[in-house]
Length: 71
Image (tube, rainbow, N blue to C red):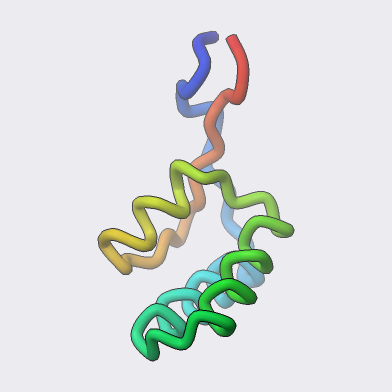
């Protein structure tokens, strides 16, 4: 197993909802709201790699990818 390799994909209604909140916050441009929504995603275990893709594409993951953090 190599660092960055996909381990599994996780479905959770809470993760979908948190992503929707984050994408909505990005649409408003409100810095405080964006940071709060991002912290919520991080506290739910969404990794930076998935956060970057979500921020860039604004496409909600139904199955959130979890990647290996170390080799």
